[in-house]
Length: 592
Ligand code: PEP
Ligand code: MG
Image (cartoon, rainbow, N blue to C red):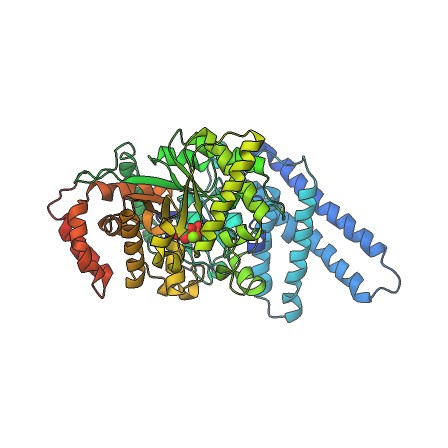
């Protein structure tokens, strides 16, 4: 039966493929394909994992003390029975044969299928056996992980004659897990939780594949292996579409690929407006490897390197100075002399150090993480960690143009502490004989307090970067990761526009650099507005650069600026902008 699920559009385009349901807690299970000649060995590996757990449980049962409760032996029997059930390992083996999934993936895919069947059972006792099944699978996954040196080499679908594209469906994906999907087999994402600028959505966008978040119940309604269309423009998911709908979406998919190819040709065109203003289009990256995509997309620098992804998934251990230095240097060298803006760690809110999903954070961890010990607050609370990161960043400056950006600043005292720490760090580096060059200092303007008191902060800074994602969140008191209030997250809110406009004009008046690196910068619907406000430096995901550049090439900044007051004074800035800026663009013929 065909049906639709509605969510929030976070990453554009159309994806058509089969649903792969992954429990949030198992998103980090390895997902890869095995070569045809590895299918039999992979099934054998799965069965070895199963047998190891059987042995473990049999030993446990045999060694139960005589006075152990009777239920314990019965429970172990149930677990052993589940392990021997063909519906688990037999069907998991079939996933390996049919789909070339690796053993862990096959097992978790089958778990999702069986879990649904348990959920639908009338008998409460049987329904509760789902928890046993989950425990058993968890044990087998652990056994597989411990049998090191045993895993096959991953291959791509092309290596075995093509496969249906796969779309990931999960209740929630933590940003730390999302980052691991960068080179994954999935061609689209659907989650129950999340808002447009939640970090999971941001990483999905950086992957440049269609995604819909905040669907509330997609992971409950969609079944393993269902055919699914993700309409990343509308925020809609169509499950088991009819042939006519499928054909329509295949057509749209081809159109959007053609449009991408057309925009891609703008890669080497300089971003200059019709009235001759040069616009910097920089890239937001999460890993040095992303710098390659940035250069390929025509970025003229990195405007935001979110260094926190380096700190995640490490079981409490933090990256050392040397480890960080190697990573920053790699990004700097990859950008070949173009500036690289490294942001100090922004841990906290929906980006915890460990692998917690947003829902876990919300309900179990911290009362209000977005307002807690996040970003610079955390760095200043951990001075030796902060100095370590600053030393690594400064050392990387010996290899290219590095700029230092600090997130979540709200107090002048924080800026003063940062400057004081930088002095110490420079002295330490000099004493240790490490080379470094001049590093410009900037802060993110993402708390309304910083935007309001900007002239005072600017005296101590070289540049600022406006983080519209958080600025909107804090100005409107809307948790950006919470789909329940997503409808109130409004970048066109007059208060937000006034803060952004004020920050741009005050920075320019003070002769200091200003850029926008929040999601607004990469959305072509805001390009005219930001140009009208006087912005000349934008930072976004590499994939967004061509569409924004097209807007820039068609813009006349003087005419846009003249229309700006009517937009800012309007009670409905969004409609006013579409009318006023269209008129301002007026005679300007399309250049491409
Ligand atoms: C922002 O807040 O706009 C921003 C760019 O930082 P992040 O999305 O990482 O919080
Ligand atoms: Mg931010």
